Image 1: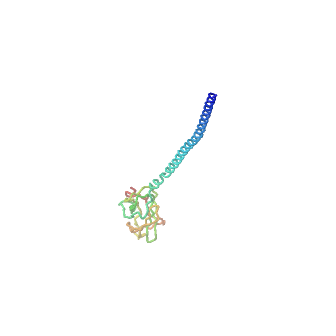
Image 2 (image 1 turned 90 degrees about the vertical axis):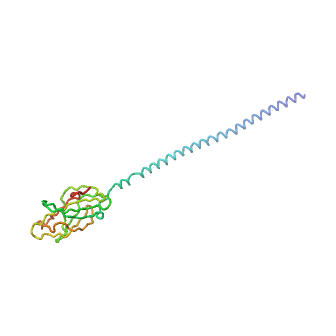
Image 3 (image 1 turned 180 degrees about the vertical axis):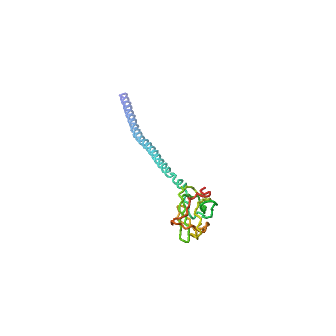
Length: 221
């Protein structure tokens, strides 16, 4: 009787121990499952964040590069390469007689010296003679003008040609010279260095002719 009770107690102990062991294994598996499922989203979110960061960096870098290229368009260097037109205020203008013996006409040469920065010049200067009969405008010779840069401190020249007064009369008396540089509106008044008078023209036209700048002396360099 005693032996049967002992056997029954042992069997019960084994059954209880096994049940407890199975319960512990199930609890362990249950605890592990949530941990593994929560780890996967965390890793995925981290990867997405890293990918998004790379894309953001690429996009912002591309915009910076584009704006840098646009700002370096070179328009400033293009504008700085241009030379302004020579203005009257930056030119020292003088005139002197330059008649050469044997020439059919008399000549006065006008000098324009650049006292400012390098500047561009081309065409004909405006020339008017002040006379006792009023202002007389010189006609252009029709010679093709050239464009050039007049360096600072350099001079350019052009001629004024007119006939000698051989009529024996007083003719048209010259009292002054007005010069307006090409593409300018401001005029300079000079003393007339040539002959004192012009012959009276029968047809009323101007006997005075002017050449383009750079067509006399060494001008234009």
